[in-house]
Amino acid sequence: MMLKGMIGMEEDIAEVAIIPSWPDPARIAQDFTTYIQSSARVLPAVLVYDHGLTGWGATPDQARNHLEIIEYTCQYLFLNRLITR
Image 1: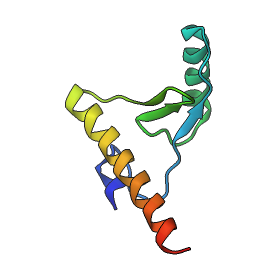
Image 2: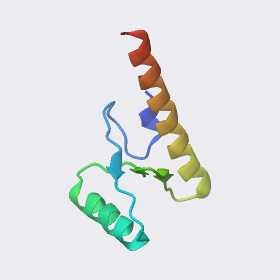
Image 3: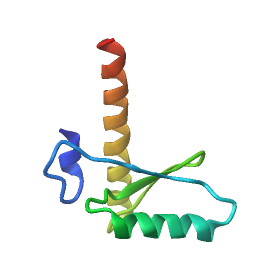
């Protein structure tokens, strides 16, 4: 599956964290830090509610690749769910 394009992803199951969007960016950063420290498996992306997907990597190209993989996977799962209803 496409998730193998992520660093360290050997499984077909993954979760993308969804954190609240606060007016204070420091609060978003704190929620993000808490997630990173408490999660056993952290994907290189997080969804900030009412803001969008944010990804990272060692280079800008790697960060963009991570975002493209997650976007593709979400589209695939959404369309698959529509078809199988």
